[in-house]
Length: 493
Image (tube, rainbow, N blue to C red):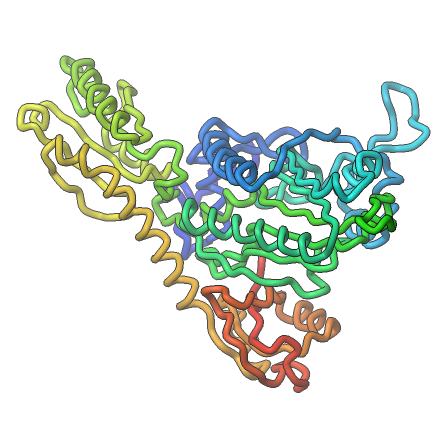
């Protein structure tokens, strides 16, 4: 048994360890006990179980539809990338070298040149683009692929830190910088919309500092979410790569005025790490709390009966489920026999199903059902027809509640600091900190070394959170602010 599968003594008496007691243990136990994922025999890697896979499928489906709506086309590239490709972009190889998995043999034969398991695909895509691109008429290239990538992780944290994880990676090439930068911001906006409207996650949109940029990028933009322990989770990124990779891989084209120019490229991604964000933003001491818009199952119907009438109640539960499906609700009937109702209630609360409906013989006779929202303490007894007709509205209310709760939590736990002592005290208390900073990379390094806090990003103008423009003095160096606004610091996953 893996030592982190939620079987510690702390976890046994509580179902899962309370967040206030040990947030790390709570997370590890919830992921496994809610049947999202498990540890694999491959060091650092995970197995995603059917419930987790169903959740990922819904994430993929929503994002894939948006990508296609905005003109992007999917393609598929090999998992193996020649080692010399990684070395062609200097910052890229320096950034990824410690994480690379290398293939040096096929059978017993040693390869003339090793391959790496893709950590990301800018290099091999650039190589192929060089052969596809001739004229400005060929542009833009608007490409993306779904798959897995490989980056060495010594310590596994399911969904958050694994050696193989799942994602899409978008790669686009453009004739000019303006168009490429517009692409970068368009994709960041799609990620923001997805997190807000589907996952009920409030995220901070902003630009990364130079020391936090993607290896080889000119500019990196991120969305940052606050988890319920106060730490930040980078939940998606969008990069303007300039002409760095185009120059390295000779991705050039003939312009309208018959000149040669290197393409301006972008890349962008959200990974299965977003499932970790979902868990840590909405979960509580009972387990997961799934926002209805993303939940694989929105309603679970639990037939309540004795041995002599259980099959009849299951049949009635199926009829109720059919009515809900007709109303567009994703619903499941718990048909397990020989399991107590109390166990079922706790099990579905652990899995975070938004609404539970209990249906017993007396309820059937009275034409009512018992309804329990996962996000509320009390149950309601409602006429059956009313429960069905009002379910979509109920789910919408739960979705709105979760977004508001997460937003309030982020705002309440973000503070302003003007001195280093104020800053350190707030970081130690698990807060995000808004502060003026000079933009000096050495100052950033010292702050990170001393407090484990980094600049999560410089909030974008127009962002709904923390975007106010103002001048001030750096809390660490005493120099003028380098950003014209306060940046946001926090400890991160």
